[in-house]
Image (cartoon, rainbow, N blue to C red; front, side, top):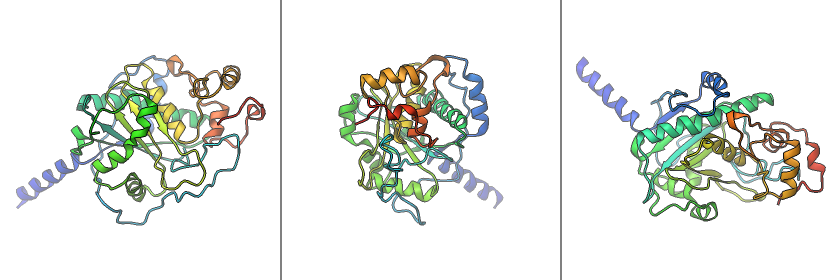
Length: 319
């Protein structure tokens, strides 16, 4: 009888292992990352992670009450941070949940080793940077990361076609809807609702990642009154030492941060940024993690309520 019970426990454990990988972002990660800030690259094994097998993604409707964003506009009304608290990503505080969706398409697939590498080299350092910067602004921030993929969790996360690598074309695909379907939900909103049933007090950050180079972007809600818009990022596994910087940059977008470079802002804003916020990660990427979340970006994501002086300049306007 004992042997039978032992076998059943082993089978249950293996089933859970193949259902969901969860990465808990512990404090020691951050301490370790602080020691890495003087290095230019991050080793694949630099950020350890643990697999928690206690929860399995249940398909279908949530079984318990949950809170969801109902589309009501509750920004502070400030014209100086027009993208703040517009959608589901509202508070970059506490312990937001990062949901990694490693997607295949007809020209690229993920291996287990590549997923582990991307998580260690791209995601964990980015979260460490955000945690460090939040602390500079006296904001408590930590993360939990869940990861889903075809190769590790048994879900067939695959886009039927070739995912565009141009942000202007890729955003038309609405890839989060495809990923929700692959996970067993009939819409991205239902997927979000399920995640909220598991984490009712936390914000949910969806990151869909493709194993090829392309222009990463964030799909954020920037208009008042729209309901049931699931904000998300699309990331590409670019061959760059700035991979983690891109991850941090795009996550900040979801919470209201604005691009500060001329291509997506204006030349006037870029010139002001060079003078006032030369290290801001929404403007440029610096080696050795010398970037910061400076005054305007900190205000834009709600880490401070103090309006920076640049906001009162006539040239400082975002569409």
